[in-house]
Amino acid sequence: MTSSGIADRDVWIRAPAKLNLFLEVRGKRGDGYHELETVMVGVSLYDSLRFRAEPGNRLDVRGSTSRRIADSLQRIPFGPENLAWRALDFLRREVGLSDRLGGTLDLFKVIPDQAGLGGGSSDAAAALLAARAGWRLNLDDRRLALIGAQIGSDVPYFLTGGAAICRGRGEQVAPIRVSRPLWFVIAKPPRGLRTAHVYAALNAPRECEASDGMERALALGRVAEIGRRLHNRLQPPAEELVPEIRHAARAFAALDCYGHQMTGSGSAYFGLFGARAPALRAAARLRGRLPDWFITSCRSLALRSAPAWMSPLRVAS
Ligand code: C5P
Image 1 (cartoon, rainbow, N blue to C red):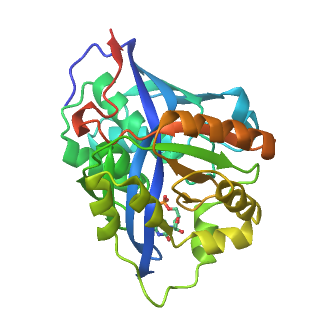
Image 2 (cartoon, rainbow, N blue to C red):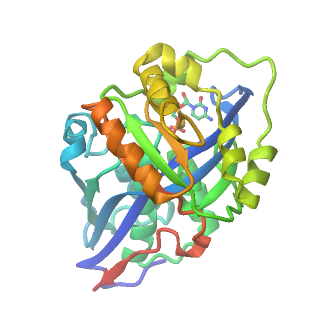
C-alpha cells in the first residue's frame, strides 16, 4: 500500500466551503439519520491545510484561525475528536498500517464552524486527500469516498466537489452542471447551530419538494430562477433555535439579490448575486447593518472539473 521513505513529506491543500441551494428532508430513517435530497455548490471560501507525513504512529492535528473567527478556537477540538484527526486515523486503519503511519496536520481555519458551511467535513475530506498523497497510498477515489462516508454525511461530497445533488443521508453524490459562475454573500450570526439539534427540532414535511427544477435552472444558468427555487427545509426549525436568522432574512430582503436562505443546518445565511460588484456592495452594506456577524462574498466553484477540485497544491519531499 505504501512505499518507504515517507518522512518529512509535506502536502498543502485547500478545503472549500459549500452552500445548500436546495435541501429537502424526505423522512426519518431507522438508523436515526434523515433521508435527504440536497443540491450543494462549492464556494471560494477556504480553510488551508498542511499535512506532513512522519514515521512512527503519532498523529497530531494543530489548529489556528483567521482573526474573524477567533472565537471558534475555543469550540473546535484539535485532538482525536477533530473530524480530520478521525479521518486520518480511519484511513491508516483501513490500509492496515495504523502502527506505521504518523503525521502532523496543520489546519488554518477561515470557514466559520456551526454554520452549515461544511467546514469540518471539508477539512476531513482534504485531510484524506492530503494523507493519501503524503503517505503514498494506492487507494482509489471510490474507496476514499467509502471511508469519507464513515466520517460524516457530507465528506463524500467534498471528495467530489463542484456542484452536486446528494441523496441518502447525503453520501450519495451525483455531480451536476452549472453553466455560469454564481456570486454569494454569506452572513453568519455570532451564535451557531449543531446539526443534530436542528434535525431533532424538525417537523417532518407533509409534502416534499423536488430538486429537478433547481437542477435545470443551474444547467441553464438562469440566476433569477435559481433564486426563486432556493429551498431549505431545515430553516424553520433553525430559526426557532437561533432567531437572529430572521434578522438575516430581513437584511437580505432589503438588498438587490436574486434570492436568499440559510445554508445546511445553519446558522449561516446567504444571498445570491449574478456578478461580483453587486455582491461586494451588498457585503459592505451588511457589515454596517450586522456588526459582529461574519460576512463575506464568494463565488461558486462549480465550473471547475471534478479532478481539479482539492488537488494537492504542492507536494514537497
Ligand atoms: O453525518 P454527520 O455526523 O455529519 O451528522 C451529524 C448529525 O446530523 C447526525 O448525528 C444526525 O443527528 C444529523 N443528520 C441527520 N440526517 C442526515 C445527516 C445528519 O439526521 N442526513
